[in-house]
Image: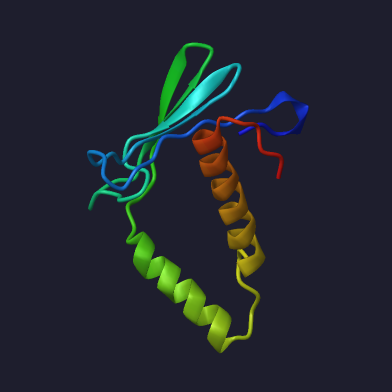
Length: 112
């Protein structure tokens, strides 16, 4: 995926692939490695930041992210608050995924 300003994104995903729970964000001067990105362990959700070869661990207390998601949704419904990410955001994400799929299938550049 290409964004304006020369920013790019690549990702791997698959429903039939071996389970992976990692995420890496890489930039010109460093990267962020999240070893338990989608399903956090019971004790920690720590991640690592590497900048110009210097690596540090960021300590994050473990939480049940699904419980927090449901609680936030309930607060929005009960208190009539706007959702943190509106439905339109999900629609835009799906347009990007559809464009990626079409690009891979047809081997063409797809503009969204």
